[in-house]
Image (tube, rainbow, N blue to C red; front, side, top):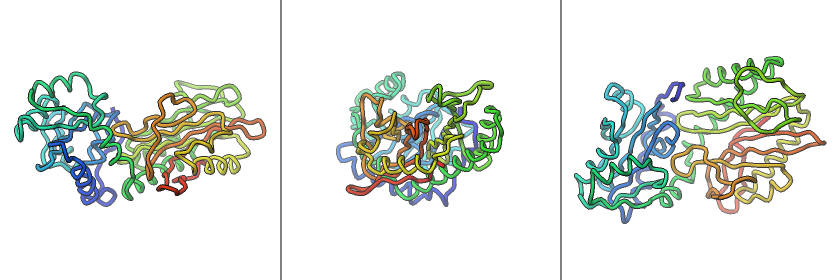
Amino acid sequence: MRRGLISRSPAELPDAVLAARIARVRAAMADLDALVLYSNNTRAAGVSWLTGFVPYWSEALFILPREREPVLVVALTYRVKSWIERTSRVAEVLHTPRVGLEAARVVAAGRADAAVGIADLDGLPAGVAADLREGGPRLALKDATAMFTRLRSAADPAEIALAVTAASIARQALAQAAGEGADLAGMIAAVEGAARARGAEEVYIAAAPDLARERRFRRIEGEAPLGQSFALRATVAYKGAWIRLVRTFGAVAGGEATARFAAAAAELPDARGFAGFSSWLVEGCRVAQPLEPLLGSRVKDPRPPLPRALVSVQASLEIDGRPMLMGAPVLLGGRGEAASLLVQPF
């Protein structure tokens, strides 16, 4: 369940932007009568990209008919209807505990044998899929993941601006850790508090308390002893935009590390720049997960991001025998163009 404030800012995410995204999707629905997207609190990125809707909890299905107005079917109770309407751009919000059943009825009411594309069909919960088939026995369900991924991949100016704001929140929040002494729990509390005060709708802080011993990030419960150098990772969501920012503390080569990191990231999606790094990871949104592993030294099934995609990159390297972790959101270039960091990690 989300804990931060979820609100809508027409200035940051105008209706015209959402309308343009929907128009792009409709233009690609040549053999489909409707597109269906699933959403819950961990897989909200697809629906939020088209509507601005971000759930605190529960699940929903977004229905985009090719020729009718979009509908959002939610398992949330009717008492939050006005909140959904304030924070989303949809023509109608329907409430039911069985979202698949109601969504199928909505689509079938327009055409009983409609061709229905489902983005991320493999990730659709089995119960929802069964209800879609029960509510619309003649509907033809098709996998629309590849189509939606192509449309979703290129970031528009509004999405970039939201990611820049999220990254700025994370950078300012991580700066709070430097003045908290040697108390790791106090540092984490200061970072989280600063992020929320600056408008983050969600923030998760992970730590690698002693880089000389271990470079793996983990959530800290209670206190943990700090080494001479340690790292914090802030995962921040702002109005549906998710980013990760990583900073190493106690290191003396931040400038050199950032330069090497930026040079390696500039070559993405080509991974050659990370050849001298101990490990690296690229995460981004394909359909519904905001930070899905796409490429990396330990990713077994790589899915290279497309040009103009927004991703978050993490990497580990050594400078003069000292380990350093860093990470930042990156905007990939168009074909033949270099990728660029949205903010500096240090």
